[in-house]
Length: 126
Image 1 (tube, rainbow, N blue to C red):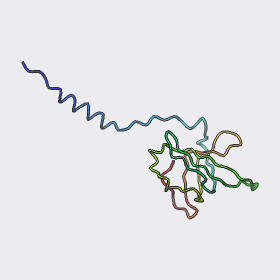
Image 2: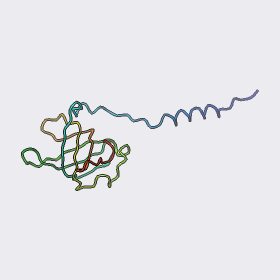
Image 3: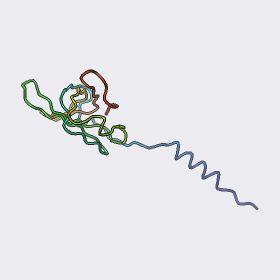
Image 4: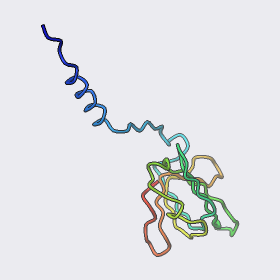
């Protein structure tokens, strides 16, 4: 009597695990951001935090009254952005379009698309 080889089982199990790839569990941004609207801002990058589970870009601009405003832009995890510190250096002037924060009086957004003033895209969408 021969004992069945477990090599076939192990190979099949490994194939399933490898083909599954990384699983990205994420929560909806709908509670904090209004994804049915878009807001646009232009300003100077003051800080970039490439972190997990979310990265952040902070940008200073002026509002319609000429007052300084700090935008807080929530982005995807650093690992999925593919950004490095050189992607968006502090001091860069950018235009950003994204979904606005639901918090009254705040200057936050998510799902942002960054472009330089000449229209050149910056990185992938966050």
